[in-house]
Image (cartoon, rainbow, N blue to C red):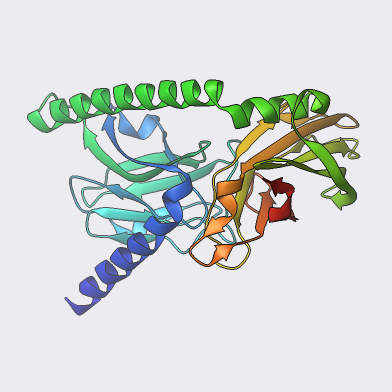
Length: 302
């Protein structure tokens, strides 16, 4: 009994700790209905670095026969307790990453899952149930339909906002090299070596806004260069701040060049402690840090 309580205490603490880290991603609760031959279909589970994803089943799992293949160095040790299985990646995964999770139920049924990543979305909880036409199954299908409708509405609203956003439009102009059509003027530039690429960083000041443009030349002769995620936060408190990001391409081919731009409004520099410097951090798709630059509040001049 004490061992069971300890396991559930660990599960609760990890879920509570991870909820604070999920703010920059869309965290969802999703239902998975199993087909007649569940062992033949590996349903995806979308995870993110430092965020707990829990799978819930209708019957207890067998911890001794539940395993995640190739998890060492990429995940916290797997937790299988009661009717739940807990996954916590140490770093972000890419969409190309695939880990096989084999969950064995107490009745011997083995359920395969593919653990991978989905941009800006993480499965905080996945409810797994058989598609047997029972009331619970019908409710799960209705819940999924409502969830899909909600996501479509949110995606449409986000697209509308970005399409009409001044900051996204300015970032698009900067990426295209048309800085002369913007209110920005370049203040300084610097060259960085990063992950087999040469990055020229240009800082721009504008009226009430600041911007940074990154021109990247991929020096790797075999692998494309890809930006994973970007984060803007205050230098002192590390509190996240909003920004607009535009890229001219999703990935940069070997030997090719590309660009992306960040635009931040002057309000992003404001905090309860007063005006602060901002830090731009960039991460590879696997969650490893690439480089960071400081954005001075003086660039967002009045």
